Length: 195
Ligand code: HEC
Image (cartoon, rainbow, N blue to C red; front, side, top):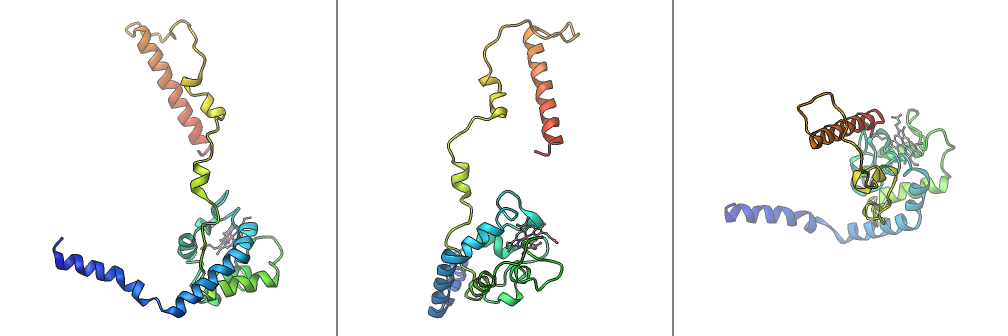
């Protein structure tokens, strides 16, 4: 990349940082505080299960700020700084007849809805993701039923090679063929189970 171009990109990168006013920083700090004290708990208790925890309904994952801003199938869930224009607020405040969250449950307490509104108005800051996915992945390894089925865990067994009806195949080829068949069958099963 020519030097001048690199300089241009660097300047472009620096721009948003320079645009941050002290007022904005203060608001975000307040928003983050509100998030850790109140909003985090509200979202965790009432929303995460269906939006980024066990399930991700409507393509909407609110466990990270990125997912929150991106929104789901319908639209961005949040317009940072503007609660009234934010789909998430409209949903929890039951302003939108079509979209009332959490579904089939009573409206959240007014205090919770007000906290969410204020948090959005201040910039919808996060302290950290609602679900620590990295630690979930790094959780101590547990050997489940499926893992145990893996050949390396199976006890050693001596038996006759499987029969195939194809006389040209040697013993090892017949074992290999059987294992490929099992593999294919397992993949089909996984596919049918929707895994
Ligand atoms: C029991 C599961 C469930 C829970 C709990 C739940 N939602 Fe939803 N959510 C859904 C489903 C299903 C949809 C899609 C509904 C539709 O399109 O009518 C949805 C859609 C949404 C959308 C629109 C996303 C888009 O762009 O398509 C938002 C915003 C939303 N939920 C916010 C919340 C918030 C905030 C909470 C917690 C207060 C919450 N949801 C709790 C199931 C749930």
